[in-house]
Image (cartoon, rainbow, N blue to C red; front, top):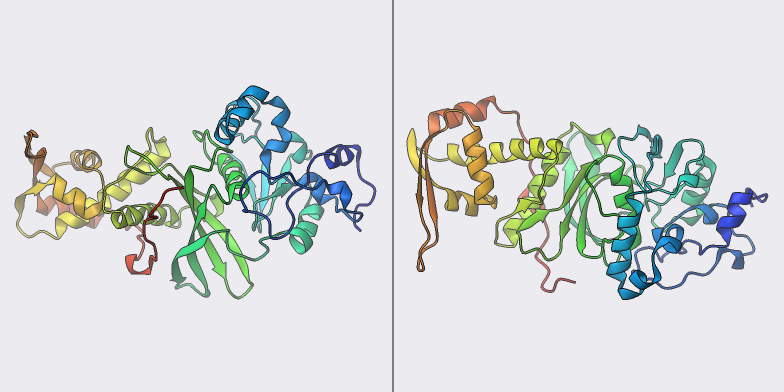
Length: 383
């Protein structure tokens, strides 16, 4: 067995619960895990990898808070780790070596040489390349598999016939380990993310490239969505990993989030406040979608109902109004009829369609999903 002579650090870690074995990742719950020392041939990687992030901070959580509920425990972990985050200088993820942007609450002993190694399949992490390779060859429960969830969208890639883009819906409740690791990785490239462990109330929609030639599945990015939200938020967090940015995947994820909203027969908006980068991405998407719908109308100038435009696009009326006002010389008049006990509020904008067509022609094309390829229906019961 590789690395029989363990360091003092690994001996200390071996006294803690080991990772779940093959086939157990994403099973949900918080059952006690068999200690690594019960395996006579336990690999050194078992001492390092973390699929239950509570192991390295559990002693810092007040017992009274942890005993309240699992939700309370994860919330306490999130709060505690805001003060303990440090930036991982470099992360190796798949075939890429990526310089990080922001701190993330990875344990500092996992990157003694200022480099963290993350498994592309299960998103577990370790401190050396050798341990990562051993894990991927022998221990990874998701080796060359799609993320633990159901595939709801699959689109062929024209420039790579042997590959396809897939969107996998992952439940934060049943696959909490995977989703926690995903949040930790995403925080390296996000400034405003605050939740890492309290993932049970979210759906995660992970976009991957499925390379059928090599059998590899490469995560591109994801967006998350709260399961029950009275504020009509259809997206809580969105990340495209740096190697795949500027290729249209961000707008594709936004398009998919709104297509899910349409299937729910409602309208949606992203969770506020938006970061500067997020706001820029959304304004570009809204502008393209709204202008495209306006150009489908005929006359040079006409009154457009904001409520009807919202129902068509699934974009919240407030976001449509903000987008229209941001387009120079597009709006020629505005009219609002206040709501009464019997009728809802109606907002009508006079639009110059000549300007709309000129603005659309000057806009950069936005990558959209193909609705017919989305195999998804809203869950009947939110867990």
